[in-house]
Image 1: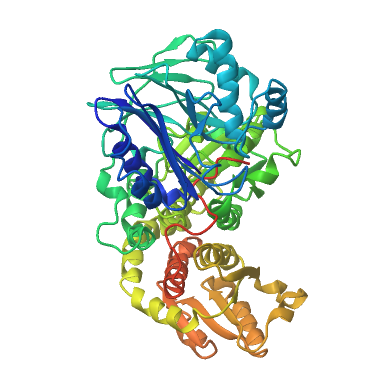
Image 2 (image 1 turned 90 degrees about the vertical axis):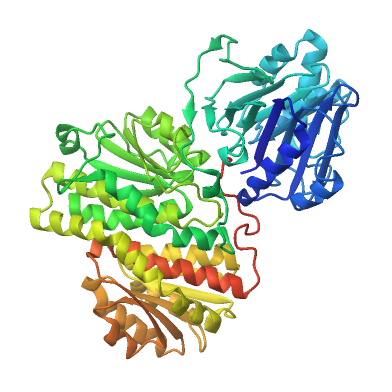
Amino acid sequence: MCGIIGFAGREQAAPILLDGLARMEYRGYDSAGIAVRSEAKGLQVKKAKGRLQVLSDLTHGGADLEGTLGIGHTRWATHGEPNDINAHPHVSENGRIALVHNGIIENYLEIKEQLQRHGVKFTSDTDSEVVAQLLEFHYNECHNMLEAVGRVLRRIQGSYAFGIICSDYPNALIAARKDSPLILGYGENGNYIASDVTAIIKHTRDVVYMEDGEIAVVTAENIDVFDSEMNPLEKKHSQVDWDVSAAEKGGYAHFMFKEIMEQPEAVRKTLSPRVRDGRVVLDDVKLTAEYVKNISRIFIIACGSSYHVGMVSKYSWERLLRRPVQVDLASEFRYSDPLVDENTLVIVISQSGETLDTMAAMREAKSRGARTLAVVNVVGSSIAREADDVLYTWAGPEIAVATTKAYTTQLVLMDLIGLYLADLLGTVEKSEYDAILAEMQVLPEKMRRLLEHFEDVQYFASRYFNHNSIFFIGRNLDYAMGLEGSLKLKEISYIHSEAYASGELKHGTISLIEPGTLVVALGTYAALFDKAMSNVVEVKARGAEVLAVTTETFKEKMEKTADSTIVVPDTHPILQPSLGVVPLQLFAYYVALQRGCDIDKPRNLAKSVTVE
């Protein structure tokens, strides 16, 4: 996701904008820019391809741009290649209006052609410049910036978060959003807009979350919010409850490693408020026993790592609930004419709560009568606000693009929900319920002990980092866990990596195994350990080198066959993926470190995907 920040206040804007953009660097970008308006110099725009440091050097840390009103942006290329011209902010032809934009304008070509017929000249390849030029076109007609913005929003189709300044309005910036996150920040020395709270947490904790269709006028003294009909709104304020230090490295070399090490505490925070007197208590969920008993089908909808959480949950939920559970990629669900009705429970999982294809899939499910339950990390996010029920993971801010603690907290929260639903249905024996719950409560401590031996994984990474193709194999829960291990590795090390259900090896995949191929064999699922071992023997016979992950119970058996073995603590089988994934995260991290990769900001990836 691209980053937006805007400031209207009583201090120089440019340094604040650059600092805010730096705090959003982790989301990924390929160019950056700022626009500042001053009484003496009018509208000043500076932008540059590459890292933010290029822009900072170009403006001497912002000192070259005078003015207390401004907007800034970091861009991931969608329309047009990464270069200075396609970078934001985009400026209208007469130089009076500057705009930053997150999202996609779907009908931009139609509008562009219309404007070109009126003689408008374009300089970039972007859909965003079309909006800047359309703003100027309507502003020239009505001579009122707020009215011009309203006309533009009624004309465009797609998703957007806008920050807009105009040289004719020296004290105000305008913000608008639809399907792309934007927040308003209330500070002592001015007010802010941002696409991510991390951009402004240094200056304020007092924020308002904009809804779709809303427009805000931000000045140093005030923020006025309007609906799509320009009716004034009273907005609920929220207080950000984490400290700025949570979004800083705290002595760690990378955010990813810090967040891996934070997992025991994040899991504890997710679990502890929801386990009381030996029961799972989900106070925020309004699912009655009568409704749950009438559920005919459960969908889990997500993308990326969250989808892998869903894959793990499918195995464990079907075992616990004795109900069919289907896991769908959000980007596929919406367009598949899904079989959803009022007896369908749809679980949507998203770390940011702003994932656009997940949001669209949730809306599709709701339109067909399904009840929706969201599992998200960000309070007040769009998915959290629109779902029928929401449960937060309480992982705290996650800065690295490759998720770690958000994944594990989603996993344990889904285990909690599964146990809660099974209890309502009466499909879980009390002895198993108690055993799972008891193991849940010691999960953070087992995870902490596992992380104390991170050097073991570091050693294996130093042995295997030079492989260019790696296969993860496993069965049942191990297969689902392998999907995430493979994704982590390819995300940050750029090694070709694939995860396969072990039983599929003989149906074609084994033809890719040749002498020296690295296979990461997962053998933590006790019920199928012997079959997992037979697959290890199978790939070894074809010359593969095997790095295995297994439990303390099966350590000796695995070590007799595998070349290298990572051991994780035993726990209840349903919870085993929460421990097993940790060394896979560490392995990906240390392999990427050995290969000299930019671990926190892998190429071509963004933290939150807000375009389809």
